[in-house]
Image (cartoon, rainbow, N blue to C red):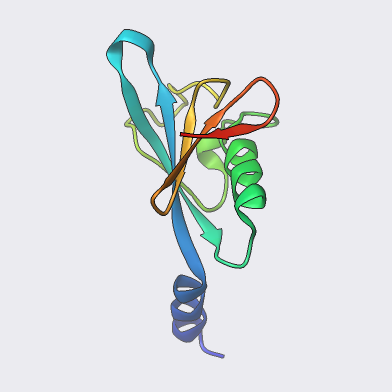
Length: 103
């Protein structure tokens, strides 16, 4: 297939998942959009979103498929943690100490 057709097919098979950080008194803030295969289960999407927005070997904003929604090129945004949320379609989930809860 051509590169253009490959890119189009990829777009049709993916969905955008939003990662929202809870910033306490400053309120929630969307920090990233992640291209996620539609074929994954909700649980797989949640775990993938969490993994892709945590800095392990490098700043998480450099991960493939992640569009960071803040200006700093060298980081400037913490990793996803307990209390943060992930929006998949119209369903929102909160990171709990163990697992996820639906909001």
